[in-house]
Length: 189
Image 1 (tube, rainbow, N blue to C red):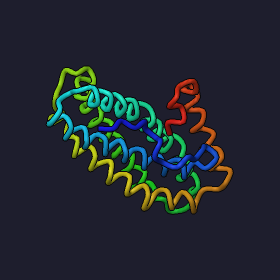
Image 2: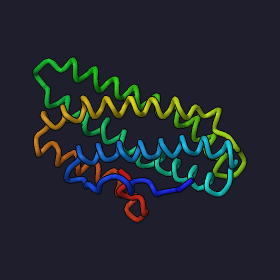
Image 3: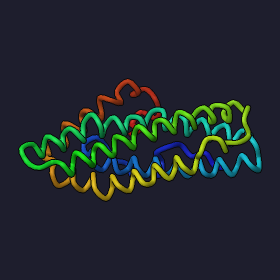
Image 4: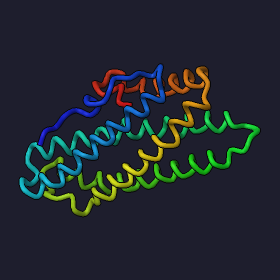
């Protein structure tokens, strides 16, 4: 099992293009989900060897930081900006979309907490399976969530948000990551 660092396969984008940055993050999430699925199979044949331990550690690092920041970027900055852009008009569809995506975030966070406990054991070499972690369910929920964001949320944000809004969102995203600036994974997105 190869243990590529999170974020190296997605295009390099920065805070000056926040919608593109959020979309690129989806690619990194999908990469981490693929790693989880490979880890599930790897553990069955090799147990919690060094490769499995390193993969579990890398996946935990990614979902504990970058994926969490991604949800915060959306909920604290993108969703409110979109809702504000619809002020005075019928924003029912947008409210339903953002509420549904927030609900997905909570479900993903709950599933991640349970899965993370299993990954901690794998990373320590103490567990040889992730069967109880429901990896396929976690991955499927993320795939559905990402598909909805890419089909509905990001195109809508691109149409509705001004350059000023996007600059403000990008700045907030950058500030959210500043405490990690000394970390090699700081752009973590």
